[in-house]
Amino acid sequence: MNTQKTQVLKDQLTSELAPESLEIRDDSALHTGHAGSLEGGHFHVMIVSSKFLGLTPLARHRLVFEALGDLKALGVHALSIDARIPS
Image (cartoon, rainbow, N blue to C red):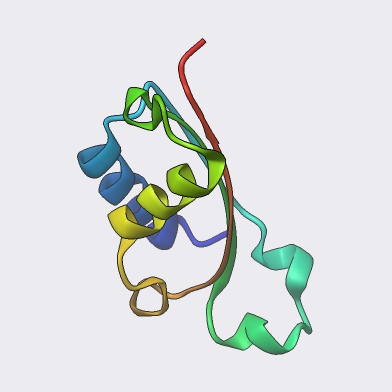
């Protein structure tokens, strides 16, 4: 588990999207041996933010990607996103 990368992801998402809930899971160990695993980690983000209100799921994902910027520079090879609105 790469806690430094996880913390960077958390910090950026928190500052940009002010989430009510945020969970980041490092799934890199599940992808050992995968060609892309050498290029960076695999992460899953579950985020709940009022900034997603009125947005389609695709637009929510775009906001997450915009908040994080250059994933390769962060050492992230793959990112799965579960972006929700507050219930």
